[in-house]
Structure formats: C-alpha cells, structure tokens
Amino acid sequence: MTGLYLVLALVALAGLLLALSYNRLVRLRNKVAEAWRDVDVQLQRRHDLIPRLVEIVRGYATHENELFAELARLRDEARTLHGAAEQSAPESRLEVAVAETIALAESYPSLRAAGNFLSLQREIAETENEIGAARIIYNGNVRIFNTRIQTLPVSFYADLLGFEPASFFQADWAGGTGPS
Amino acid sequence: MSEPDYREVEAEERRRLLGSFGYWDLVAFGAVVGAGLGYLYGAAQEPRRQAATVFAGMAVGALCAFIAGWAKAQGRARERFFTRWAAARQWHYEARGKPFEDTPFLQSGDKRKASDFFSGFWPEPGAVLYQHKRIEGSGRDEQVSTYVVVHFSLARPLVDLLLISPRSRAAELGEMLFGHHGELGEPIELESVELDQHFRIGGLRGREEEVRRLLTPSAIVRLLDFQRALPDGNARFEIVGSRVAFLVERTLTPEQPQLIDELLGLWQPIARWLIEEAGEPAAAMPGDPEEARP
Image (cartoon, rainbow over the protein chains, first blue to last red):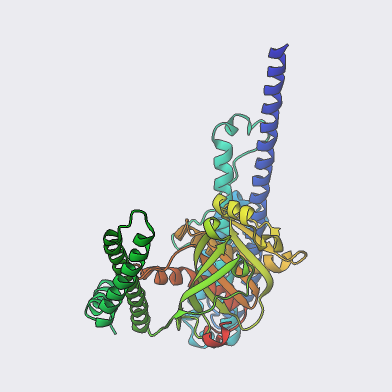
C-alpha cells in the first residue's frame, strides 16, 4: 500500500512539474510573439516611410527611376510576407535600398538642406534604430525560448506539447542596424 | 590641470600630520588622560597596582589619540584628493551634504547619509553624483547599503512614477526583510525576457501605457547594455515626474576614482535618452545643483 502511495505521489509531482514547465514555455512563446509584434510595428513604420522618401528624392534625382522601382518592389515584397523566417532576407535588402536612397539624396546639396527631407531622414534613422533594438529583443527572446526547448529535460516533451523552435530575425548585411 | 595621485596626496597629508605640533600635543594629551584613568582604575583594584595601570592607561590613551589623528588625516586626504580630481575635470566637489529624498528608494531606510557630491559633468547644470548610505535597523542589527547615485531633473515631468529595480535574489530578500516602497509600483511586464530576468518594472496603477510608451525597444536595449556592463551593480532607476535617480550598489573610494567615470559613461546614454524623451536640448538642462539639493 505504501508503495502505491509513493508511486501516486511521484506521478502527482511529475504532473505538477510538467504543468509548471508547460506554463513557462507558453509564457516564453508569448514573449517571443510579443517581441515580434514590436518588430512588425517598426517594419510597418519603415514601409510607410518609403513612399514619402521616394516622393521627396524623385523631385531632385529624376533619372534614378531604377532605384525607386527597386525600392517599391522590395517594399511590396516585404509587405506580403509574414514572420521572422520569411521577412529576414527581404527586409535586409529593403534596409540596404533605403540606405542607398538616402546616400544618393545626400549627394544633392539642395535636397540635403530641404526641411522635409531632414525631418524624414531623422524619422527614418529613428525607425531603423527602433527596428535594430526590437530585433535585439526579439532575437534575445528567441534564443532563450529555443535554448529552453532544445535542452534537457524539456527537449523530451517540448515537441509533443507542440513547441517548435522560433526563427531568428537576421540582419544579413554587415552594416545591419543597431541602436545608436 | 593634471590628475592627482591619491598615494601622493595621502603621503603629503601624513607628512603634514606627523610634522604638526598639534598632533603630538594630542598624543601627549591622550597619554595624560589615559594615565589618569589608569591611576583611578588601579586605585579601585584590590590589591592596588597603580604603577601598572598608569602605564597601561598612558599607552592606550596615546594610541587612541594617535589613531584618531591618523583617521582624520585619511579623511582630509580623501577630501583633498577628490577636490583636486574633480577640479582636473572642471567639476565641483563637496565632501558633505544632505541626501536627496525625492524618489521612493532614496526615501527608504531608517536613516540616510550622503557624502562626496560631484557636479559639473554632463548634463550640466543639474546633475549630481554622490554616495548615498541607506541604513536599516540600529545597533547590532544595523544594515548599511552604500550606493553611488546620479541625480538630475528634467525640464518637464516625463512619467508620474517609474521604478526599475534589480531582480536579484539578494535584493528581493533584502526588500522582503527590511521592506521598502516597492509596493508603490504596480508591476509591469515588458516584451523582453532578458529584461524581465534582470529587472522589475513598476509604475502607477492604471498608468501602464505611460511606462510602455517610454520604454521603447531602444530604451530596453540601453538598460540591458547597462546590465551587461555592470552585472553585479544591483542598478536601480527611478523617475518621479521630472526627478531622475540612478543608483548602483558601489562605494566611492579615492583609490578607485575611475568608478565615477565608468558609471557616468554607462549612465549617459540613458540620460541622453531621457532628455530626448523630455524634448529638450541637452545644453538646456535647468536648475542649479545647489538649488536642486534639498
């Protein structure tokens, strides 16, 4: 009889530990999702700024239509994709294209001095800064979540409970953003 | 002006002490008082042995006076060194002053003491760095925690209350045992797991959005950078309206004045962020440190 109680107690303890572990995993997964929403908001902000950037720069650099078309194409492509895994590469290309457009604009002294361009440039810099910071937070959360589900003992049952590793949001190019 | 060397200042102060007549007068006076007390003590003993107690009292009295003078010289060396060290940076130093008590943690504790006030660094004027001692209990149960505090005021109130306190077990245990105004702050969870592991965020009930708006991803990354640079600092940040206090559990010593530069270097990106959030240019920081001090 004592043996039965002991087994029941052990089963109850294992069930309790599993429930606690499950709750913690759910919490971590929600944090990853929450951090991704932050990244997404900032990416959306970047997408919204691109038409304004094109409009302002086009008034001065009339013969750079190829770059503007590429920028619009990358923006449209990025907007149709969802999630860190899908968006990493197009967003990195978009980031480079935005940086190139700003560099191009800076080669026109009259544009460089224009008030609306300066305020837009500041807004883009702030957005890139926030994207970089949100990316750091998101990747930090992903690292913690993935480490948790890929290490023992959680790795034994994480898959069964429906927890899969999350994707990092990578900056593909060397000059990737980061908060300044 | 070149940076002073604490050893030189200390040696100079000791030389001055040993060369002063007043000091040897004090030692002699201590010996006389000690001898007198020794005589009285010996007379009260049975059998009487005044000779031994007079000599013992004389030695103890002289030694106490010697040590007291020596300790005073050390204190003077510290003050002189910090004054010169601050002047080399065109800062101002004051050895004594009243502690700030305008944020919950700065108000906490049974007693508070403050020393070593530095001012004149960026953002200037208005920012003060000083050593804050928080004392709990008394007698044998007295617990003293020493913090280096950077305190300044923004041009306009940024948030009614924001408390960012360390989540270390030691700090939590300390607060559980000795209590503090932690209950003032309603816990707020932000999106970063790492931030959550290191800090507890608190704000006024129903004002969560205000805090979330302030703690943007880049602000969170700045806090995490700070935590990584000083993992054992038990850092705290408190904002009450326009008053900002930033505390690190450290002690200021003249042997390691570089701690001040290190802390200011780590703190300034956070201060810059707060100033930008308050929508003011860094040069236009209002308030004189003398006025701001309570």
